[in-house]
Length: 129
Image: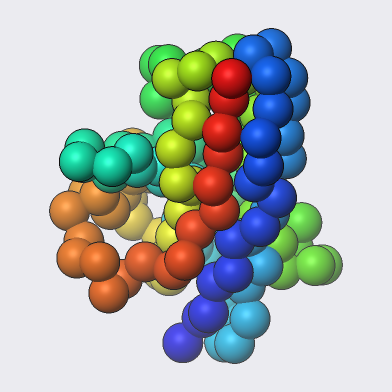
């Protein structure tokens, strides 16, 4: 079983940048899907970006060109570089990992928000003003 801890959130001005980190500990995984998701109060969680062990990535249309997802396998860490932040990016951000990887990264990202609260960690808060 893999445990995930998100960090790196904070308060930034519009147009600013943040880099989120998600450290994975526990079982070593090789073929996987990993992703970032976000949620604001009273709204459903949504997929932000996903990455597969073969390096393929998937982004929500709202963050394309501004956010970059990456993995440092040596550090067991997932990152989300967020540039040109907008007020609508403000949310609690969560990471997820699943192994083995799904046949479709896009479908995996779309499905994750359906998971109940006990499948999610504490998250890291991003505020943009």
